[in-house]
Length: 284
Figure (tube, one colour):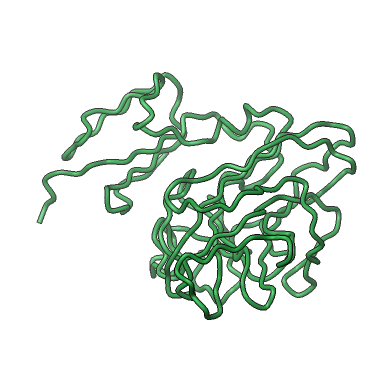
């Protein structure tokens, strides 16, 4: 039966590209293999992203099973990507000193003495079959630059240092939270790593439902940017119709079968979801 009314949440990328962002595949849109199982190291499918510790995850709607799909994953819960269709995820903390760290080689090494702007989006997630029933949150999600390559088997050590960290407990599971700031390169770093680089004595874990089992605190990550000009990060950020942008007009909203979009800039790609979070239309 045809639905008579659809209420759209529309994200439009009115951009020209990724500029001087030194992070390849910054919003996990490109993939060499669709994710399929939380038991696999599926972050490798979002090449050139990799693991420096544990088994961080990759989510994309190309997974038709729904297990590691997006925005809804039956394994890790719900979260509309901050940009595009893909996103990544990692365990920030858990019993037995559990940590996961994802990493990516930069397109060019950092220049010593140069100042770089860093921007990363985080979203706490709750639920999913791969989780214990812990409604938990942590602090000190962060980024770190390195010259050493690690793997899921030769793991990066946890030594209580990050070049930039979100020091507050990141509670929000509805809206993406941005970690951003400036960093002056003291080495020609070639890798960027994302995760929690602090041990259990240097983080806060808030357990909202007093779950006593083998808990996991889990976060999605998206829109990773390292650049000398913050405007390069703004270029690929989504524009929501709810922000009443002067550059984008969407009407009628709600719509039944016809939706008109007018933009002052070229539209690179678009993604349309209904109020239930189901993908209705995408293209570019």
